[in-house]
Image (tube, rainbow, N blue to C red; front, top):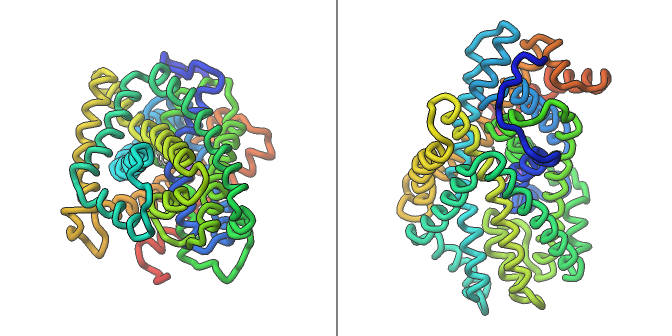
Length: 453
Ligand code: PFF
Ligand code: NA
C-alpha cells in the first residue's frame, strides 16, 4: 500500500533496523536470565523447549509486529488504530497498543535495576573491590550492594539517565548511532569471552550441560518459563519491535530481517551460556544459583583465573552495553507516542518519561532493601513487575496481535505488507492462527493458577 507513507523518520543505514532490533533483543535476557534459567530448569531440555518456542511463537509474532508498525507508521497505539481502520475493524484493538506501551515501561522499571548491578560490578572489577573474596564474601558483597538504597538507586539512576540521553537524541542520531558501535563491540567481546571459556577447562562440561537432552529434567514449569522467556528475549509485545518497525523502509524484507534478529538473539544466548558455564564448572561451582549466577559465581570464578580481572571487566562492559541497547528500545514507544500526539519535543518527552520511570524503578529497587517486606502473595514489587510482564502482559499482547493479523485484518493488506513467498505466507498464517495462540493459552492457564503445575 502506498497511501500512508507519511514523513515518518526512517532508519538511515541499510543495517539500521537490524542493529537496533538486535540491540533491543540481545540484553540481560540473554546474558543474565537465560543462563540462570537454564541452570535452574536443568539444562539441555529447557534449551530445546526454548528453541521450539522461539521458532513457533517468537518468530511469527515478531514478523506480525514489524508489519503492524511499518504499515501503521506510528507508536503501537497509533499504528494499530490505523491498520485496523484500514480493514474496517474496531478501534478497541488499539488497547493492545496501550498495553504494549505500558509493558515496555514496566519492564524497564526493573530492568534498570539489574542493569545497575552490571554497572556496579563493572566498577567493582575496575576498582579491585572483589579481589581476594571467598564464596561467602561474594554473597555478602552482592547483599551489601542491594542493601544500600542509595548505592543501588544511584546505579539504576545512572542507567535511566544514559537511556534517556540516547533516546532524547532521536532515532537516527541517538538510537541508530549508539547501536552502530555498541553492537559490534559487544559481539567482539563475547567472542573473546568464549575463546577464554574454551581454555578454562570446563568447556566440554558446559557443552554437555547446554545441549544434552535429558527428558527427565523437563518440568512443566520449565516449559512455561521457556515460553515466557521467548517473548521477553525477543522484546515482543512491549512496543519496542513494533515502534522500531514503524521506521523500517518499505523495501526491507520483514521475513529476512526477523530471522536475522531471532537467530542473532538465540546465538548470543547460547554463546553467553558457552562463555559463562565453562568458567562456573572449571571452578567446581553449581549452575543453579539463580539470579545471582553472573554476579556472585562468575566474579568469583574470574578471580581464580589467569587475567581474570581483565576478562571480568570485559564481561561487565559487554553486559552493560547489551542492557543499554535494550533499555532504549523499551521507552521508544512512549517517547514516540508523546512526540506524535502531544506536541512534546522528543527531548522533553524522554526526560518526562525518565522521571516517571525513575519513580517506578526506585520502588522496584527498594524491594531489595527497605521494601523487602512489602510483599503481595509472597512476591515483592520487583518480582511482580517481572511476573506481570513476562507471564501475563507479553503473552496476552502477543495473542492479541496474532489473532488480529491472523483473523481480523484484511488478508490482502497483511499479504501485501509481509510480502512473503506463498508457501512462507501460508506457514506464517498457520502459526499466528493456531500454533502461537495455543502455546500462549498454555501459559495463561498456568499464570492464572487454574492448573496447579
Ligand atoms: N529482549 C531484552 C532482553 O532479552 O534482555 C528485554 C526486552 C527489551 C524486553 C525490550 C522487552 C522490550 F521491549
Ligand atoms: Na534477548
